[in-house]
Image 1 (spheres, rainbow, N blue to C red):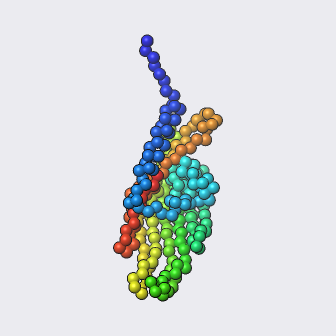
Image 2: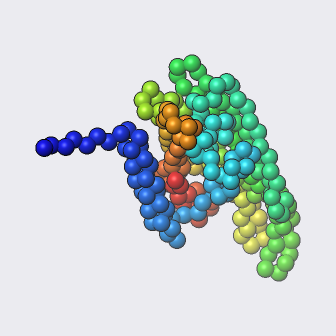
Image 3: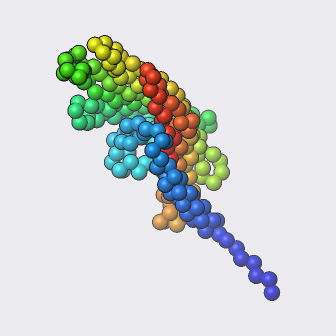
Length: 232
């Protein structure tokens, strides 16, 4: 007798999820290298009040304006034009601001733009003899240009964000203190999976993947060059 085994689509989906998370876990372990670059503050702390409320577990459910940062694939789940703004204050007078504007089209997909910036004022500049040269400001900005589109197959959506990064600091050479700045660009790529399960426990399942800073750009300030690593 010949036995034919049938594997349900649900079982294949579960197996794909398991393999996916094993792959991501392995990638994270190999990513912990001292020469891999420096993650920027937005990657470390996240952006948006709703995302902060979810403990930054937001890549799989990003369906508001902050999707330009968290996962651009979620943009096409917006039902109408959306404006979102976020402000927070940190230690030592630092502040973070984030604003986005998104617009969904009927069949084209959804586009979004956004800006995030953080900084601190009143940084005292002194030399080795404790002579004061006044106060200076540090700032860091990211500008987002995003697109997301739901695909007609398998409950998938894809998206991408083109990102411009600008950083301003100060440099001291002897008695001279002057501002320095650098600009670079990169892009993010997002994927979201929302299958149409009939089971109540899985009906609202949503899984996301966002690869940030795919090109691992470099930011140069004077003679120093800092690599911005890609992040999953």
